[in-house]
Image 1 (cartoon, one colour):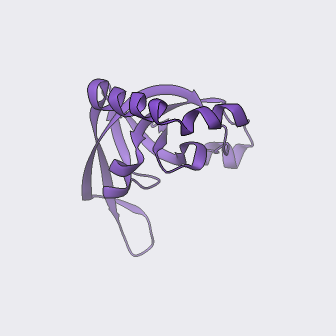
Image 2 (tube, rainbow, N blue to C red; image 1 turned 120 degrees about the vertical axis):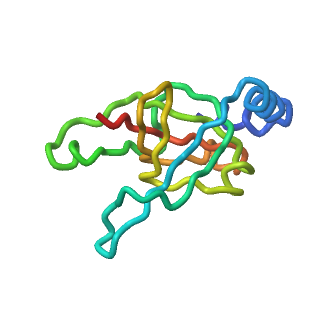
Image 3 (tube, rainbow, N blue to C red; image 1 turned 180 degrees about the horizontal axis):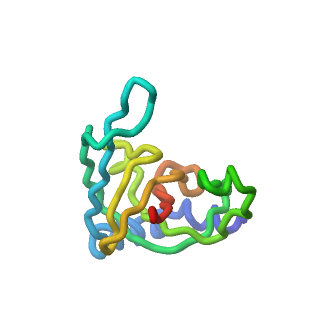
Length: 132
């Protein structure tokens, strides 16, 4: 793990990631719904956030998330999850929050976790969960 983090600190690796996101990334529109006085999500849209990133499937290493269904039923969490890799600087400009929603290839997804890759404030993986 340490050798992987050391490689990420090299400026050439950062340039490659930045260039890939800028060149090959897609613009994703995240939707944040308003909440009522009980904290429940309503149908009203509070905010739309556009951010450029690369969609991929990856494993969550920092902290395995549990979906609502899994919390209740005790199902083992999945190792792989859909993710969007974004630049930290873009993320900070318009922060995405847990439970924000995004459509990927016509499928609605919910943000379940945001991982600061290698904890160096360069890139973030936005972990998604498909909404049935």
